[in-house]
Length: 323
Image (cartoon, rainbow, N blue to C red; front, top):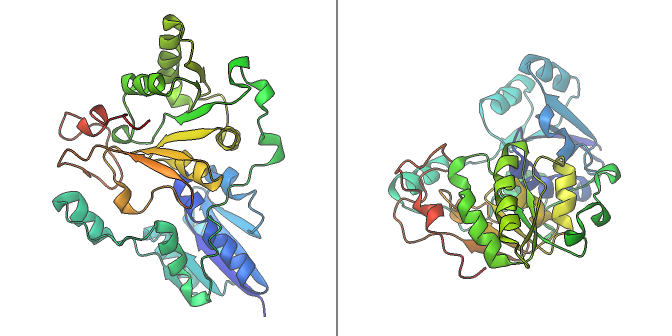
């Protein structure tokens, strides 16, 4: 008997990548399962190539239209991995059995506001999988998935000659300021690495990447060669560059989880957030860089546009001794 199952996760890049073990487990472990996924239109490039999904639905401007579209599918079960107002409304309107992800907001609040850590020592992926446990799926241990369409593969021969024989990738961006190293500290990190480095980020990171690249041009560095790829590639192309890197340095952001999907060695850099929230690199070798010598971390479960304390010591005083 066919089961038609809907997974809900609207955003963001990293969170959607972290749901891929649930998608794979449902498709491979349940006989005759038809797996649908609902997310925002601007994350289409992540989910559309996933071979374990039978159909993807996109939230655009009108939630009512989306609900009507979903109602026509006659789902048997809903796995709500977002658990916000919109996802709860979808579940209510469809009237379909299901389960919602437990965000552990009270425990996060205690950790952020009182530094009392009651978070389980469990990765968020395993908590996502537990949301669907009533369907009988198990963790297959295969880690995360990321599928790159053939047209988005980037060939090393198209990169500068300095990077065609290999490079270290640094994802310099992050959605929130307090998750990002200041530009001068990224320069310091690049000096420590002292190898060909490819900078990854969006168009909003291009200017910072230019500053970093220009610094090493002026210095005429023999070891550190910078290629500023920020804003030059789409997400899937950036993922291709991550896949081909020797090692990936990343803030607590989406490309860190993309790197984990390719089983890359990751150096994860943490500012105002902490790995204890359960979103560290999954099923891959990784090293954490963080400043544990201050009492104000974590100051948020997400991030801020500026340091609430004004000193930003979590990033400004983070040590690079183990780079």
